Length: 234
Image (cartoon, rainbow, N blue to C red; front, top):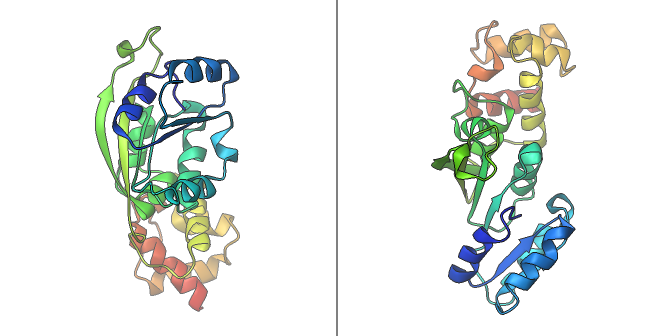
């Protein structure tokens, strides 16, 4: 996933035990293979990263006495969110994910749940990882210069999720409902999502001590975990 003829890949090859490059653009495959043909710690896969069995790929290489797997990439900006969520939801045996993404997206990814830039993906990122910004990259760093600025972020993967919840799938379903219409109250968001009847959701929010006018983006991950567990229990 290297969009600059291998500049990033070269740095990685020189410092890592092995580099596996996943590149969808067939035009780049010959360029990359030719540039790095003398390195014995490099492999390239011509495939869409969303279709690759990353767990199998990592497992096979760890069996070859390679450890501390990390993911480093310049992500295609138009599918940043699906790729990030694939990497997290598959619970890969990796230490970290370091990626360059559009700056506005980076601010959403690394924000704290309930922060001014937070969105549904913010909660997913903070559930699985400890995110941080590495550096901002202005558009003038590229030729030709794109219209947007970029940021490099690092997601340090947690050994266990940041909050305990009895059903992860339901947790993220509830978060998604809360952010479907961001200006709506949590009560309306969950009601419109057909989670429960409005009366039942009102009772739940009162029982849990939430204001009936609270918006989903104001809640913490722990708040959503409490809601999830409440629904499962009742």
